[in-house]
Length: 293
Image (cartoon, rainbow, N blue to C red; front, top):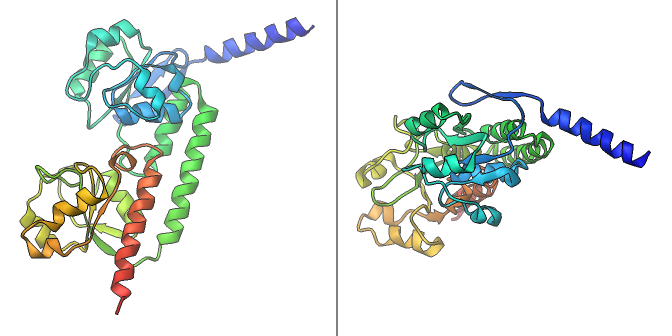
């Protein structure tokens, strides 16, 4: 009886595993698989991280360069980066699903992979609410919906708590630096801008058309930020603050500058909660300084 029971469970599991799945990606394209993916290639470090968070890390057979979180991701074969995909290596890995980044991967590379017969789910989390949505989508495509749903719900609870805590906070004008040479920031369509808004801040370059515009020092001065946040090109807190302290431009030298770990905010993953906490804490310091005599 015990043996029959085990076999019966295996049969049920096998039937469930073979069920087709369909999910619409951020291109508006429906990605249909005959069964949940067993061999996944992720073309961005954030997507590797999302796959692990969704419970599908064990199904990753290829990842993008710089995929370093969680540590297990470093052991997975690399297939290139946003600039270049190694198509031969991808083919050798025989994936049944490609995870791609809409604004980071070349559309022509993704289209080529699809022509070669590899289904591609392309995502672009532009708002905090998109992170749990993509988690659930990856969970559906990989057959790990329970784990993905748990991670998504946990993320939503954390963000809701931060939103409630800072809902009535006084506004702070923020310049967010993602790189220093050239000086790059983000516009209002970027997820970092959504984090700033969550914390009661205002992105001074929110209205710029480009997603990650190159701005001049003069434009930063004209925008009149009250604080500088960022850290994409710095090695830590001291280095980030120091690069603004040495500027010869007085209005900027006097501004507070706070380092935000780029891995916690420039990757659209559940760890962005940690970045949001850091941003909110920095803006609270600005508000506190306003109240000082």
